[in-house]
Length: 198
Image 1 (cartoon, helix red, strand yellow):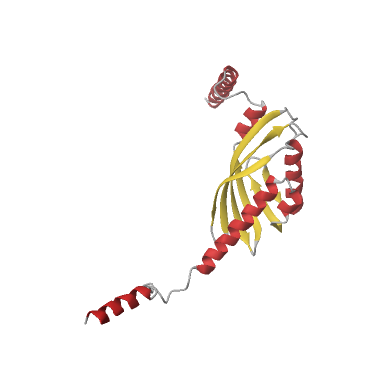
Image 2 (cartoon, rainbow, N blue to C red):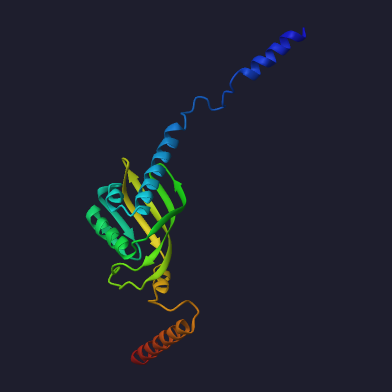
């Protein structure tokens, strides 16, 4: 009598478990799409780390739009090519690291860090200072058919300005003096405006 129960238990343990929602479609496609998006964005940042502008722009659709908030809109591959050439000309030793990446089926968020020495060509009209810089930022990519179609990128432009010496270090005597002068000018403008409206 004990043998059939043992055989039943062994058979039930050997049989694969059937999930409660066995009729539901598998999640494989969704996972595969997310993985493809993640791989595409990682490949883009690997090209950036190699300072390979042509490989970078090949990840984009021809009419893609890169909205780098502190810099402005870059429309199309040619504009992106010129901008990133200028970045790498300004910091020839630039090193890019992705610190966090979260991919969806058509979008991806990537936190990154670029560090290097601002010792090459001018950047956005600013002469190189020879200072070491480290910029942290975040990009929000949208992809279609395996190409990046848009991105909104954020980084702290004030931090960059402080690191290259364009702005004084935060909290320094020069920083406090600059803020005091700005506040005095603001109060003066406000007083003048109030007198005119009275």
